[in-house]
Amino acid sequence: MGMFDFLKRDRSTAETAKNRLQVLIAQSRQSANEPDYLPILRQELLAVIKKYVKGVDDGAVNVAMQKDGSLDVLDIRVDLPES
Image 1: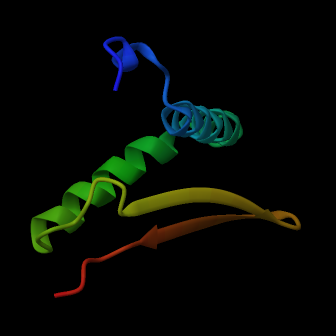
Image 2: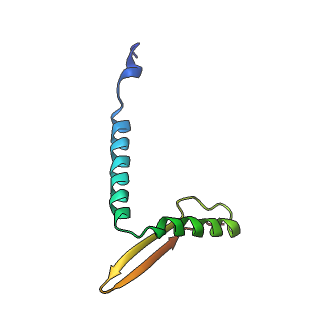
Image 3: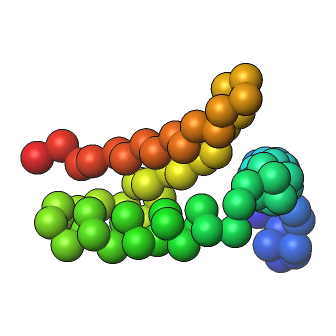
């Protein structure tokens, strides 16, 4: 181990950062097409679920608007912890 080994970049760290950036870009593109109230609805649903269920993660509630022909469909998915 050399004295300056700590200055070398780790490829796995760069790859992780790249993957995270891709996820953020995908989310921003998806959120550009959704109504303004969906993030607020998600936060309110999460608050209610956390009130009654212990151990729920902040990312446990996913809210999305989907088109089904001429209809708009609200898709709500909740991941509850196993207990």
